[in-house]
Length: 107
Image (cartoon, rainbow, N blue to C red; front, side):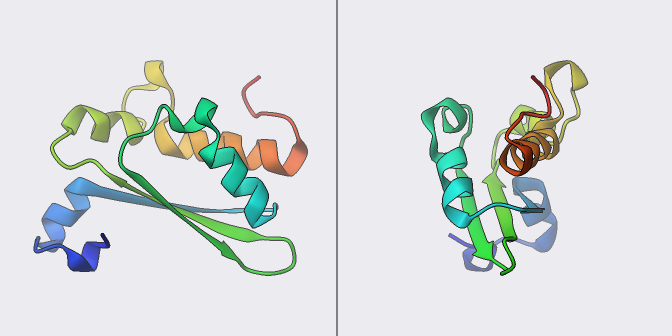
């Protein structure tokens, strides 16, 4: 369900759906494999991914995370608790580095 399908005000949408986009020098297939591998996706809840091939070996990866009714998850994925990691931004940075260099950002 896209945000346009919801009967919520823009303020509520901002609180319940978090959208992130990064650009990764990798094929759509490599990104899809990385985000659908059970070692990665077992940690995620109600997440939608969109991969757009922009040409020249670069893809845009957009993640929408529905955090409706989950204020603690909202804080975690935003990176508000550094002792538990940097949220989606840190996860995306690690995925980007892994796919572009073959080595994780955080070994």
